[in-house]
Image (cartoon, rainbow, N blue to C red; front, side):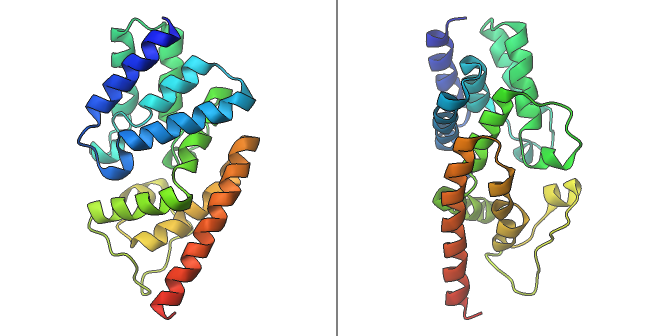
Length: 215
C-alpha cells in the first residue's frame, strides 16, 4: 500500500467520519495529533506509515462517545484499513496502538508497547495540555454539563480506571487528575521538551484562575 495513496484516503475518511464530533475530539484534534506525531518522528525515526495511520485513526470511534466500548475504536480502524487492503501486520500494529495509547489504558498493567506507539501517545498527550488542552478540557466539560469549578469537590488523586471513566467532577479537577500529570509521562525527548512548555502555561493559567476566584 503506497503511503502517498493511503494517507490522503485516510484523511478523507477521518474528516468525513468525525464531521459532527464533539469539538475536542474532532478532525482538528486529529490533525494536530497527526502533525505532532510527524514532528516527533523526525527524531525518533520509527515506521512512518504506522505512526501516521495510528495518529489519524486513534479517535475514529472514542469509547467515551460509544457507551464505554473500548474495542469499537480498534475495530472501526481495522475494518477501514482492511477495506483499503493494508497489510495485516500494519493493521494489527495500528489497532494495538489505538487500544493501548490512551490515558485510561495506563491504569491497566501494560501489555503492549512499541516505538511507534510512544510517538503517537506523546503527540496525543501534547494536545491534552497547554492552551489547546485547556480549551479542550472546558469544551468537553461543557459537552457533559459539568461545573467549571466547585471548591467543595476536591480532585481525586487516587482514581481507579472505572472512577476515571465515570467521573462527573468539575473541569478544574481534571487538571489535577490528568492534565498536570502528563508532562512526566512523556516518552520522547521532543515530546518532553514541548510538554514542559505547555505544562508551564497551564500552571500560569491555574494561578490566574484561582486569583480571579478570590481563593
